[in-house]
Length: 142
Image (cartoon, rainbow, N blue to C red; front, side, top):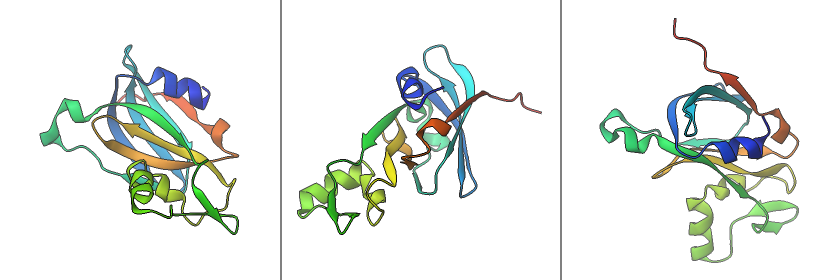
């Protein structure tokens, strides 16, 4: 499945679990309105999480994917840098685009987030890895 097809299908998904080994991120979801149980595998080396707790309940697990391009971030010497004003820095931080600060322009295409009432997980997608997103059937519990 293409990245943008995944984003389109993801409305009203339910977050189940996350695994990350420093190279590969795996997200278990009930995908979209059909609640298809899937495991999404995405290579990334930059990730931020804010996982929902059991006390927060189901509403904190309802989510969809959001993609934010890095175009528009300030650039200095071929690398992304913070905005020159405080308001700009705060906007970039809220969208987790600040994760790209210090990286080379063109190295990453954007930030993909799984978000509902807040961003559960955000990670940078390498420009040359956008087609390496895998969506697999969720394995049966053993």
